[in-house]
Structures are given as C-alpha cells and as structure tokens.
Length: 150
Image (cartoon, rainbow, N blue to C red; front, side, top):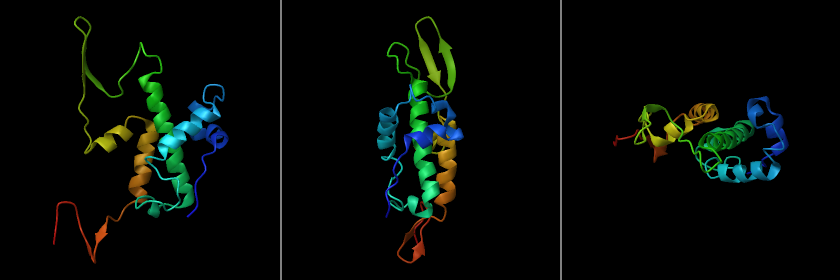
C-alpha cells in the first residue's frame, strides 16, 4: 500500500478547485489541516478500505481532494465569523419577527448522501464513490443484498 500525500500547491492550481486558489487565504497549513480531517472520510492509504479498493491511485487522490474541497466549501458556507453563522441546506420558510427558520428535510436516502449533496464537490465525490464501489458486499460465497438473507 502507498500513502497518498496531499499537495496543497497542486490542489490550488487544479482548475476544478479554483475557488481555493488564493494562497494568502488558503495557506498550506490550512489546507493540510483540512486534508488531515478529510482522511477521516477518505483513506489516504491506496487500497486502504473496502470502498477504496475499487479505485485506482488517481481516483482515490481525486476523492481525497474532493473531500478537502467539500469541507472547505462547507466551512465557507457556514461562515467563519461567529456573529453571522449560516446553516447549509434549503430554506423552506423564514420569519423575521420572533425569528423562525424552517429547513427543507433532506430528500435523500441517508444523511451521508444529504451531507455530500450540500456542495458541488460533495456531489462529484458521491458520484465517484458510487461508480468506484459498485458490486456490493459478499459474505461467505453468496452475495447478500440489504434487508435480504438467504
């Protein structure tokens, strides 16, 4: 197994991640800290998890970079200024007097997919993970589908 090393300079120069190209705002230590957090979701070991075994090195590097961009975009959406936090999601209703905000419930199967769909980077990552991890899981000699036992 090889370890994927996050490269902040390559991340900034990649046209896919152009919103994060400003080296003054998105410094190397900042990007590296987000990359460390991203490895909690996407392994930095090539072939390091059951999901990542279906990916080649380029796909897994892209997945790691997409997760970094997703986390950065969410951080930007939420806002770094404590007085003006924003909640990511679709707003269904809002009132000004007596402050009330209603968010649209996630129209997705699970919380993981909903969370990834909050940014375009997460949407691309979800598509990549779905393509790279097709085939399901096998227990013993038989394929087992969700909610189904032989």
